[in-house]
Length: 387
Image (tube, rainbow, N blue to C red; front, side):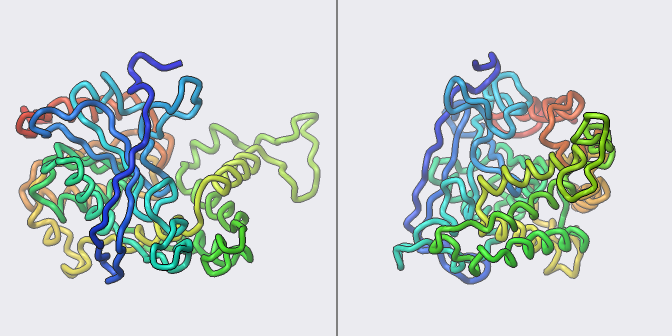
């Protein structure tokens, strides 16, 4: 059953590009596909387009359902739709699966045209800049010269920021949510542990597991369990699971290494589910892109200098319980933008869900997004007034 304010039934589309794409590493993709979905209608002058950039495990399926009985709407369905904060009565919304992804866009599991075998370990390492460049080609494919806004949470927020750096004349508004100008050493460490769990899985075969007909399931499972812990706050885990025992009959302990606590059961479920859906090579490349993102790297660490040529207006949102991408990191972005006398709105939302708060239908958070997006004039993509 579809909700009244759902975008309804949707279907993915594929854009094919024959022109070679040179990546930041120097590697060249001779051709590639990007899978995407769109919601709403593009207006006559194509000025109402909004690009949604996904986070690490996201994809192109942002909103709507694939069939009437579909129990899994798009990952940001609570945000995108008619009369929702990102209103498809007003905006033409684009969601895509990033290059290197495992949901249809060209990635390590795709066939290398030169060998007619899966790319596997030979698929190049990607960066946020590479993704933005490929997204710009998708905008060209759709005939869109300028985006009203680019929106993203977490790694998606990094892409939104990079859009305003790489293509300052092609995006009017950047919505950077639960993100950071680069990863802390601790975050790089979390990513490395997760990658090592995958790389040291005997079924990984140096990234060429497709040829062996296997999946490094154990490594993926551990990587997801570790990551999931960092996406939640201690309060959220405590409220949802606490120290509740899985065996509730007399609270009898088993004194072994099977599941004893509900928290353990939840993590194992999340790990098993992820290992059955996601590609290990994609996980490695997504986390590495996170590690490499650092606009200030070539400016002696000065983010303000790095953002000197940005022209967009911004909404930056952080969440109080997000310890992986803390509010302090968002404030670094805000300061650098203000140093360049850019128009910036900043909101620090009190929320208990940790980093995952950007995915939740929090009324206060959604009201902030709705207020900002409502004031974007899609005729000239400038704010009508001050947020």
